[in-house]
Length: 299
Image 1: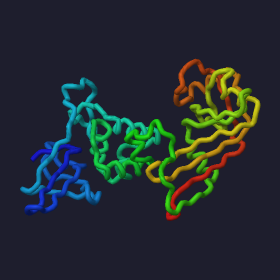
Image 2 (image 1 turned 135 degrees about the vertical axis):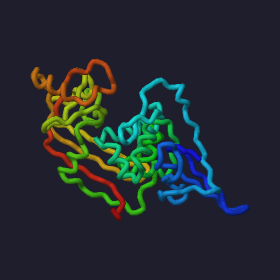
Image 3 (image 1 turned 30 degrees about the horizontal axis):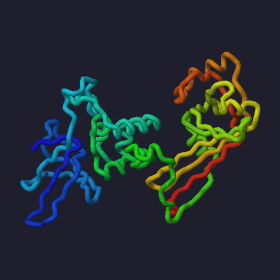
Image 4 (image 1 turned 90 degrees about the vertical axis):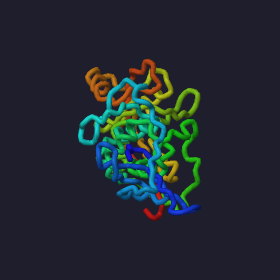
């Protein structure tokens, strides 16, 4: 019997009509794929070490053939080559991107999720089809949702799920607010324009004691200059019906000093997603920062 990470171990029932049991192989003890295996059972979500008997067999999911990909090869948890082509699926790309955004190593993420680092590497590097139990574990470890990892609802507004049975709304202290703002992201600036009020999403960075973003002159976000404005950042966990929001209020100004413009450009984490010529830097002083968080009353 030989298996690889992501395969399913199926244990047939002891007699006719008896229920069978299956689980996902999330850990290998031998490089050649021979037993025993760490298996996450689909019915309980528990991981156990399994020595398969004669009533067990391996079911291989569809894998992309290695010959179809001429890219870099994956490395194992110990840094040695595994021989697999790095050809991630959408779930793997989203998982790796969210892990990198939070600055987490594979080892730390795997520890939080209760899975082997090698299995997490498999999820990130291969077009895997993990079980719902595995998705829930890794989504919880990253503080995101299964829907987000799957890319579901990308074209829909967040928050269409049911509210928690016993929700709790609490204020975030300034330190928690700053932590959730992080160093960069996407937020919304509320401005007054000649056509009326507008709320516009922009890519932002937090540098020193200011929130900064790039825009184009005469654009709606540029209307923030010279006024006290509100800037909001939030996150919604659709699967868990929870989330948070942080509101920044402060005066906005255009940054014109060449040295400061260079500093902002050098320290920017990303270019504007909207593209185009957006070289006007707007800085919002963090005069007042408040936030709120919705969780279950039991938390």
